[in-house]
Image (tube, helix red, strand yellow):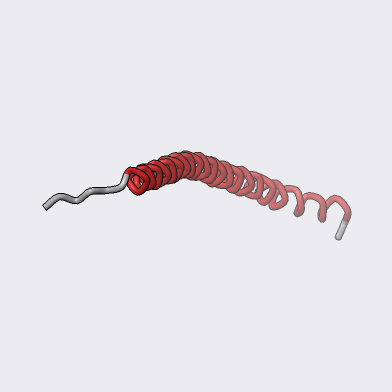
Length: 83
């Protein structure tokens, strides 16, 4: 049993296969590109979270210092001004 493909049909099959391979290559390239972009975004988010934690710690430290300073200065100021 022989299956004779006309050369025109065979060429069309080869062309469609080449188009599918090209589309698949494009898809793989774009997927790889997106994965690297996602990794970059994740790194940026992690950096922002670390910076936010650092800023919160700095604000907490300043609040503690000012609280202690006001606890010491406020009674002295009241006494000085006679309030």
